[in-house]
Length: 342
Image (cartoon, rainbow, N blue to C red; front, side, top):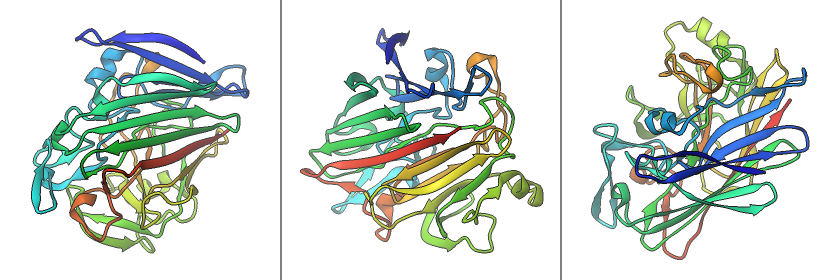
C-alpha cells in the first residue's frame, strides 16, 4: 500500500490517495475526497494493466464532476421525491439539489467532502466523516466510516458503518463507473449482464418511485439470464438506457449474497457483485458525454455501467419499502464486494 498527495482543495485541505495492490497484480486507488474510488487496474495479459474504472487524473476534475464518479454517496443514495419526508409527524426538508427533488445526499453530500483516513490493516484503508445534525437537511449527528479492502481473490470489499443520535434515513452506496473492456474503450454494448432479481421498483418518466413493483418477465428489464446489452439497445432503438433499481431482498442487512454478474466476452473479464442491501441499481451512463478521463482517454453515452448497492430510492416516503431509518443505539452496516475475474 502506498499513500501520496492527490491534491489540495481551494480551501487548503490536503487530499491523499491510497493505492492497494494484491498478489495477482490488481491495484485499486482511493482518495479522501468523497471517499472515492478512482482507479481499478488488472493485468491485461501483455505485461501491462487495463483500467476498468472511469475516473480522472486530478482533484480539480473531481471537484468539478457532476456525475458522481466513484464517490461514496449519502446520506441517502438516489432520489427523494420533493426533497421531503415525514418523521414522527414532522415534515423534514432536504436540499433540493435536483429541483424539486433530492439526489444522492444533496449539494454537499458525502461525495463532495473531504474524509479523514487511516490504514486499518495491511490492505485496508478506512475513511471517516462526521455529518452534523441538519447537514443537507438530515436530522441527527451521524458518524460514518467507509472502508476498502483488496483481497487476493480479486475482491474489493466495501464496508459502511454509521451511528446517529437522532432517527435519520440512511442508504450509502458507491457510484463507480465500470467498463470491463477498458475505461474509455467505447460503449458497453459488448457486455453481458445478469441481475438475480425478478422485480424492479416502478418509476415515472422522472425516475421517481410510486411505491409499486414490476415483474421483469416479458419486459426489457429482464436480466435474470446473461443478456447482451447491445442486443437490447439494437432491438429497442428508442430505449434510453438502464437507470433501474432491482429488488434483491425486502429487508436491509441480509446475509451477503451474489446479486449480479457482468461479463465482457472479448477480454474474458467479469465482475460479480455481492451485497447485504435490498436493491442493486443498474445505470448505463445514459447522460454521459465526451468527458476527458484519466490517461487522456474519453468516454461517451453508454460508455460505462454502474451497479449501486443501496436501499430503495425514495425509501423514507414508502412504508412498504425496506426500513430506511437508523435510530440512536443502532448501527448501520452495509457490505458489498466487487469481485473481478480476469
